[in-house]
Image 1 (cartoon, protein in one colour):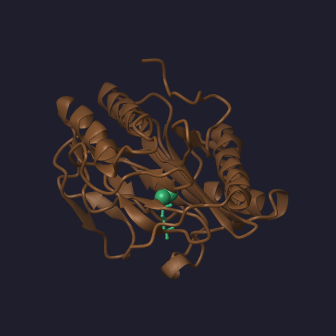
Image 2: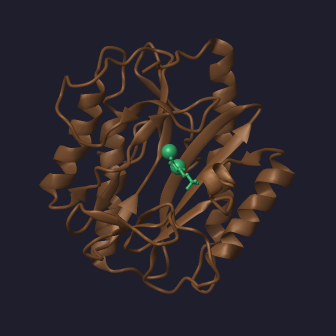
Length: 260
Ligand code: MF3
Ligand code: CO
Ligand code: CO
């Protein structure tokens, strides 16, 4: 395992890629309403990334992925493929955006409630958001990856939800997926120690029911085995001397996350 420590110049380029990924989520927000299809969301994002940002949507053709973004609805855990089905009132949707700018990747995702959603759906999404931020707030030189995983897992399980084990956060830079693997479960002190200049994603997937998942025959879409609802949020995070910097922060967010 070789974990790259980014140089000051590489960090500056990662800040730009991260900001662009965040801006795609800001741009698409007003479009995400009952009646729109995930294909239409994909097309709007694709055009914006190419024509406005002069950047590249990383998912397109990544290991054969057919679209420019991932859209995962309700019991879909991750890697959902945009299609021509219309979003309906009560759905919850994850939109996952990865852009490449000047050779570097920025990767971020968020949940969107579609119209009025159930109390369970709202709570699941909120717990997942808080879990991601509890993980992010562990990040500083000398902390270990296990501190991040433990902060996420203990909070999620205390709320009677489960953490998906098969997919994890990842180092990111010139490559979409670099070392290290950032597990969303674990014990304090486990795993490698963090150093300033590391950049990785934190992207917990949590289920309202059991943690088990299955892969659909399309070869991409991951769903919960028990068909329970699933949620995910993702940020790209830089380890700094002082702690962390979230490279994919949106305008409505603060560096500490939602008020504790
Ligand atoms: N953006 C996803 C992640 O957070 C990866 C998507 S891979 C794709 O790591 F091929 F499905 F796009
Ligand atoms: Co990611
Ligand atoms: Co992502």
